[in-house]
Image (cartoon, rainbow, N blue to C red; front, side):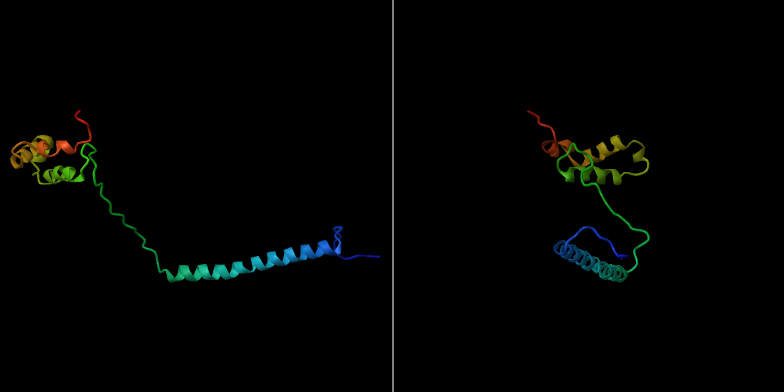
Length: 119
């Protein structure tokens, strides 16, 4: 006699368990097309992406000697106020510009906020 199908040596109770597991997998896989439709709809509604993203950033305290970023900003603003001629010798020119603004010297207002311990 010719028999069609596979015989895995399963009795009816085990065959029922296998059938239920198979149906559970098929149901789980049937969700995938619906999820794909949702993903496509969300991506389509997002609109076109910008071709040239732009990131603007600024280092708030690039000179770690100062614990207060405002102290670094004083030096940055002083450098930016220098003329092209003064920028040829930026350290000396900035020190002179700061000395004009601070009678006791610029460090007198900033040394307490430095990152070292004087003790």
